[in-house]
Length: 382
Image (cartoon, rainbow, N blue to C red):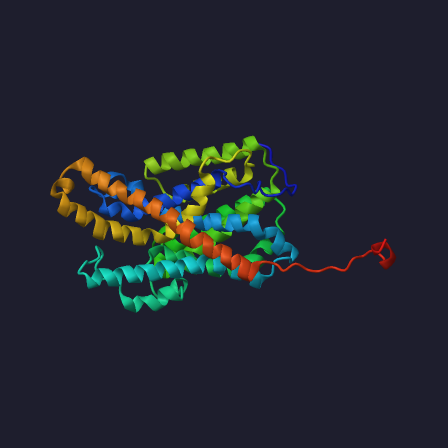
């Protein structure tokens, strides 16, 4: 493996690489995790790792710091991107989807209640919890994620984004790939040890009231990984070796239902391997998967409610034997996953992308600056 301390740019910005594909896989695993208890046989009882979908969220938290450093690191370091502009762009990316999804969920719950349909998780949709959801107070421990569960990640990441320029400038003082890697590992191991000592629980699966303590170290570790990729002279072979090695460790540890610390460190290796490898040829469907993953992550609470509280009971009335025939019951459950992916794709095409394009044109498009012609007047009239 060839590594040097000479600064080199982060991996190619070409979309459609392995990290884009992994975003979709991770988002889908979150959906499987949240739908797991509604399967004909609860998934966690079939294999212990299927009850660890929270690791996919940890992957997103680490990846968020890594990708931000790749996309905005140079602009922030040079001062071309101001803190206010950077933070507002991140808020504009996250908040509209959050508030629209929450509004759709409220309407769905109210309509369902009016027609006599009760939610599977009775008591979860308490109107008293809406203000905390709207204001994204999860990171402060004020209100849980009981309406749209994944929204707590937006709450915490927006705070991380506010500190990103300061944190990245500090990371730029590190000019050794080994120190960067050691810092990332130390952050993950240290924060998990602190969580076990103070809270009696691993950091990687902390509940909503501790979500800031869960997210911030992983985000910071992602920045350290990005600096390791930037300062290391990674060859394509070395990057692939690290990435595939991390993937192999993750698969073996998952099969053995081993420690989550090992899983998270393996995820870090995968991110390094994918991030340090140039995208010479896009993976088919990977760019689409990356675009859909955020919507998949955010709206599956709605699609799950529609499927398991409306579609499935209706199917059971029309075909009473569906719940007693194993393959039909499983086909019905897998239908929820297909329905969620299709709905997320439509949400991205019809709602999320158009809104982001409008916001970009309205608020973040840089106006054209009219510059005086530097040529002398006589030359201009020649």
